Image 1 (cartoon, one colour):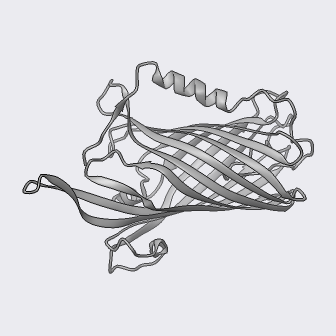
Image 2 (image 1 turned 180 degrees about the vertical axis):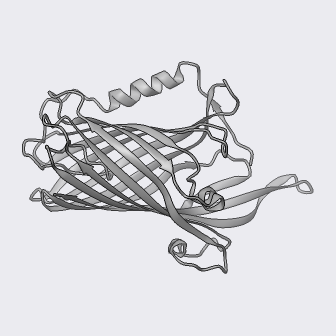
Length: 322
């Protein structure tokens, strides 16, 4: 598979990290966290530190599916044509349990595990939910535990409770080599996430998130990959502080070094719009549903195209405070 790449100058990584922080730290003064337990979650990540001995449980289910168009060069006509189309589908179930250890309410710690289904189907028009079955006519579905991880959530500035940073480490645990490859669970992954949540007025809020994840090289994959992303959401109180609607936008490239000591290069990119809803009838319980549509969906490959028009993705999440 041939990749089209874009060079990033030597200072590019530093600029991206600075921008990642600045976009998550707008200088607005009013905070919506006036009540204990008033945490909302719009991307599956809650922006509020738990009180001492508080417990938070998150269950997230994410489905992504789209066509892979495999191109081939025809020397007779001197053009490129689509030789075949496949459907790629992946569903991930993640459970996260977080506990409040801090007397000051400035940090908490969580553990999380993820179970993944993955499938490449010869029949492009098959249902994305075939990934959940054992159907073998058009392909094989792979599934299993894909990772275990820890998450440290910190409020860096007590005077700015809307800003939190989260450090994560995820470790691949599946023992089957073929399954690890199919689930994309071959490497240890570390990450830093910054979130900022605040309100323009009593009915309109914003939620910003910056993320930088690094998939470390190992004996199975000797290339380190970096996955930064920037997201912004407008949040509208649609009904009595219980039902919220939140349109948003996310940009997510993948960066890699193609040789040791070389510059980071952009190997693919996505620009996704989204529309979501959160129902939180009481502070300790909330249900979130979010759909995504692609504006940019570039695989970076000259032989395999991600077909933007075929893309579908959603996230269903539940959050409980104990």
